[in-house]
Amino acid sequence: MNTNLIRNNPKFELFIDRDYLIVNNEDFKKANCNYKLTEIIDVELIFNDNLFSKIITILISGWGLPKNSTTLRISHINGVKEILLTNCNMKKVEEIFIILKNKLNE
Image (cartoon, rainbow, N blue to C red; front, side, top):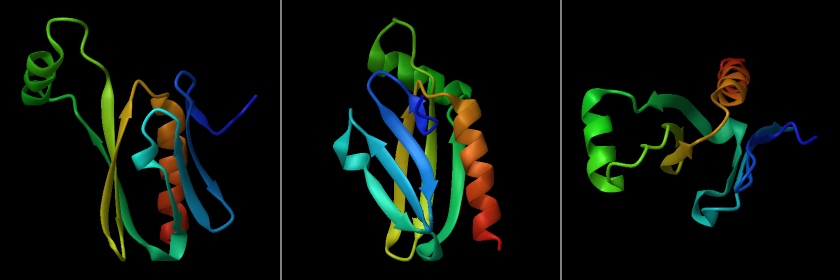
């Protein structure tokens, strides 16, 4: 069992390996990245569950079930990267986020 998986289909991994944050998304290759922890300034989890976000999601995706998404914002020395975490295991994401925040505060 791969403990790095935050979504099974399509495969999406988020994990810390040694001194790097690794993002591996088979569905959206542009989101893939490896960041050295010493180059990360801050990370944020932005939950897109306000009324405005839901209205926009319905308008964009139609009246089908809107997808559950959260944004991971990584501020690093070269700028900001936002990664959309759609239909991911948020419990695992939050666990990784807490570990990452702790490592950044060391």
